[in-house]
Amino acid sequence: VQLQASGGGLVQAGGSLRLSCTASGRTLTSYAVGWFRQAPGKEREIVAAISQTGRRIYYADSVKGRFTFSRDTAKNLEMNSLKPEDTAVYYCAADERGGDRLRLTDYYYWGNGTLVTVSS
Image (cartoon, rainbow, N blue to C red; front, side, top):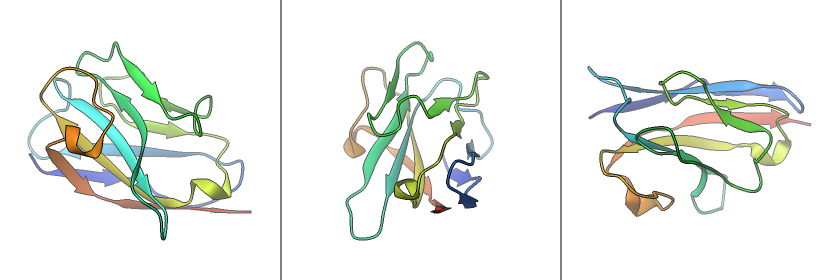
């Protein structure tokens, strides 16, 4: 499965972006999806994760209340009230296995990142 993250860009603080994660030739309906980000000089960290069924959702404390998964089955990430500290390269990852998936090693498939830059 080849993943592609898109939707990043330059936005002012307080603005919004919608990140999409697409898979070549298939949908991600039956996959657990995680969104991670990596800021310059920092380790990659989890931002949000959604289970295969969509019934279990996790948000990092730093984004809780601001980021949400889209209501459709695409498992895209809607980011609102963006802050300069949200600036990072965002990656989507997917896995066919069940269970909680909050670590980098929990995901088998990874996409290229999309850069999000939030100006103050």
